[in-house]
Length: 130
Length: 197
Image (cartoon, rainbow over all chains, first blue to last red; front, side, top):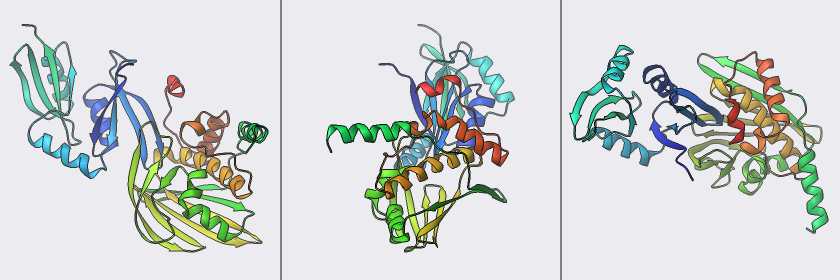
C-alpha cells in the first residue's frame, strides 16, 4: 500500500489547473470525465510518478463549510516541500501568486503561505534541520 | 441461471464491439456547449420511458445510479458509477412528461430526453450540456450506454458498461477518436500510463 494520490477541494477545476500548473509549477497527470464528474490530477515534475494531487470539484455543501472554516483560520489545506522556499516564493510571485505569508522562519523549517485562488491556502515548506 | 447460460452471457458481453460513431452533433450557444445524440430504438415508448426513469433499470445501463424514480419533478441524488472515487451529485428533475419528455440536471450538467414514436419503436434524442473538453468522451460513453440499453430492452442484457469498464474496451479509443474527428475537436489526452489504473 502506498500514498499515491491525495485530494484537495477546489471551487473551479480550470482555475485550479492554471494555478497548480502555470503558477505553482506542477504538471497535469490525468484528466478524464464522466458527466459532471472530472478526475483531474497533477504531479510534481521532480517526481512525475510520485504522489498525485487530485483537484476535486467542491460541490459538496459539507466540504464547502469545512474548506471556508479552515481558510478563515489561516490553516493550509495542503503542504508541499521544497529545497528553496525563497526561490519558489519569488518565482510564484512573478507569476501572479498571492502570498498571505512570505518565507518565515519557524521551528525546524522555513514556511510560506499562498492562496491557490480556489478557496485554499497552500503551505510551502523548506526543512531547515534542528 | 445455470453455468452454461452464465457463460453465454459473458460471451455476449465479451464479444460486444460498438459500431461506428453516428447520430451525434454538437451545438454551441455562447459559452454553452450541447451534445445532441439521436438513437432509434425498436422498443415501445412506455418501455423506454421506464428504462430512463426507474432506478432498477437505470442501474442496468446508465452512467449513474438514482436514489428515486425520475418520473416526478423535484430533487434527487445521482451517484456517478465507475469513477475513480465515489461522487454524488445533488440534482433536480425539472420536467417529467411520460412517455415523451424528461429533463433533469446531473450536478452541473443538464440533460433533456425526448421520445418520439417511430413506427412501433422510439426515436430517442438526448441533449446534454457538457464541458467542451469532454464532448467526444460523452458521445462515445453514451453510444456504449445506448447499445447496452437497446440489448437490455430486447431482453438480452449484456451488463452496464461505464467508467473504466467502457474506456478499457478495445473499441473505446477508436469510438472516441471518431467522434472527436466528427466534431473537429481537440480532446484532452491521457498520459500513456493512465489506462493501467
